[in-house]
Image (cartoon, rainbow, N blue to C red; front, side, top):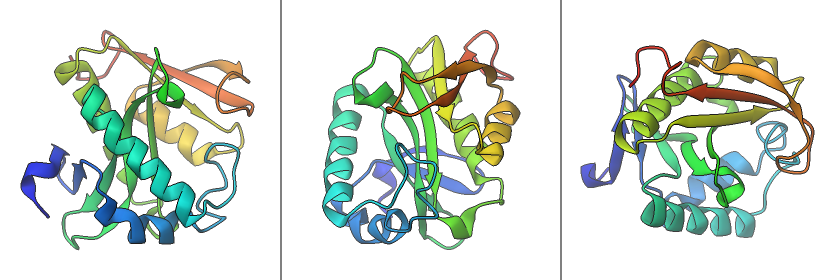
Length: 179
């Protein structure tokens, strides 16, 4: 891994600027229907969709200094998913915190680690005042991650991604140990 691509580093993870070099691994993760059950409208993505989203993530990083970064597990050097910050639905003005991990990496605390590191980066480096995160109501593990990371559930909405979601918000002032 080229250290110049690392945007955020945690104890166990590297959050790196996305690259088309990551396409094969991400295609294997996002091509799995179970992994993608609670992402957007749900369902596996094709290789072409993943390539387009990866290119969009690269543009978003260049234009905004944030994106859903490629997540690399330090110990193994393996790509395990994506996570970070984006203007919601890549349009803004709200800044969304999100993460998606290959199912073999669920339950290891990585999502919480990504959420906390991404929030700190948004507040401290980018000067963002508020973050939003959305998830399916029935995605209880993700809801727990967001609460553990310091988000507050603020209600339901159908404004994001064309599906009903539970909306979470965190402000710089309310973030635990951030800012």
